[in-house]
Length: 485
Ligand code: C5P
Image 1 (tube, rainbow, N blue to C red):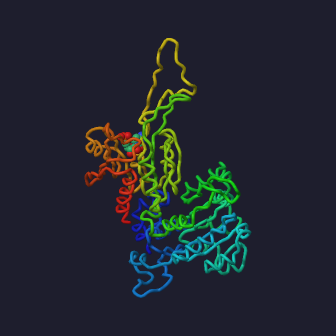
Image 2 (cartoon, protein in one colour):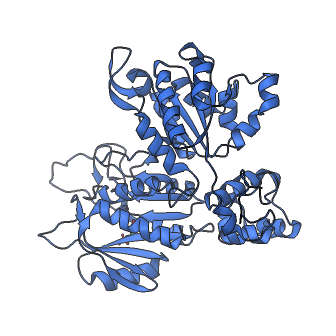
């Protein structure tokens, strides 16, 4: 596949810039050289794969299908879409680490095989204390790999091939130790080496004692991994084998299967796309104990983040202080002020999609006091000097690596559609979801329902009043159409 065809397939040079985090001149250089630099090939390969285009990861040329079929296009054909329709059995690389829940991996393998998935398994040394490679191989129908330095294993299937040939890597159960190794990029055994070398989506199903799970070290590692696009399923809460009760149980095999399914190439409609979502209010400090806030609950933004993740997008949710629990499968960045939200949003670029659903405070206090402001005896009230906050939506819309689709919300109390249309143009967003927040009998803030208009360059569409969840689903349908998914 020629470099021009690859750039077109990825949505054009701007998308390639965003994908690789490079400027326009770098992409021109690649075109002139007729190839991507070596370091970029895995990302390009992944992005093509996410779009259903199967190429060789080393050369970025078309691969031969696993099972030759009649009527299948030949290698070298230029019909990428025809290639993508080849029926390929997905390859799952299951990594089993040590823990009492390891026995549940056997049930998981059976369910994967029931779906005709090709299952390769890597076991850590401690996993082998709980179940044997023999029983794993009997169920998976494949050799089980465990030794980084085994000549036999390496001759049969090198660790790089193991990592590269997986469509999805599932770590189930994952110990706190393996999560920590992933977070730090350690590669001292086959499991951690493969995890470092893979370009495939990684799904972690943690299982550990509730105190180990709640430990700030584990939670920090989890957040870090999520920010890098690693997905999590579970842990569930309940009675533990160790006799304690709390969050730490391995997710049910059926839930691990569902989460894996969403990550298979071509399954989630937004598979592989990166999205950043802002949600909730901001708190702008007045002094050490007081702040200016608003009534946003974060329900709409969180529902959108959850719906994006369900469709396979890699989601960073940047949320102000809310009571709403973070949805599973998204990387949560908690912030307080508009400036913190802006920093986090820009750090999440490049991204394919940006959705600004946060009710960002328009002003912050310029003369913020480090100490609590005291009442004065003469009854004089202090004067707060306000300064305007950065406009995150406008900044993202005009950013050098602008997401392909930028969506904002416009909460208005009158002339809802007209104001929102003007706001779309002023802020440079592609779409605006406009809602009327002025109806005393149907408040939007905190409610589970919302009545919105979708405003695009093509005009304005009124959506029926439905739950915030349904609005999120409806929006995801539109986004999938926009990305031809
Ligand atoms: O200007 P207004 O607050 O009405 O614009 C609303 C839209 O702009 C929302 O999408 C909101 O998330 C976004 N916004 C922002 N940064 C601000 C103010 C609003 O991203 N400082």
